[in-house]
Length: 122
Image (cartoon, rainbow, N blue to C red; front, side, top):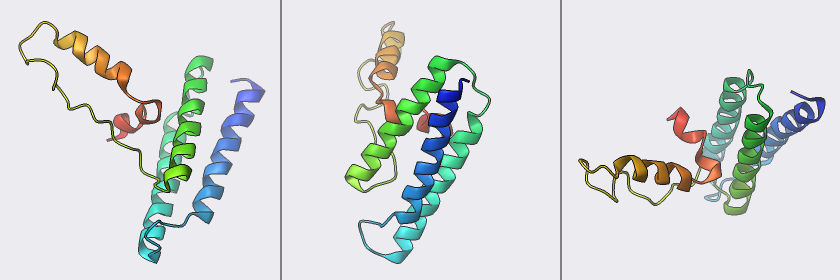
């Protein structure tokens, strides 16, 4: 990892924790605010620690883009949780079709940037 990417990653990590400190739930209920703050902190810690040994520059840049996208979407909508995709699993082809692999590949390509690491967790 270069010094520039290291600074970007550490800056994002600090930015996420600053956002978590100032976070207010849309429902304005204290319980919801606390839960959402905890989710933001736990999600950030988990993903950053899981990926701390990644050394490939392109992969790191993808993770940085994903992180920025999730931050912007979370701040814009006021919801810290990733937004779901609206493509039903195996909804486009029959289970015995040869097109299954093609459809699965298209489904993976159609997945939004901000959900790539979220599916690996759940």
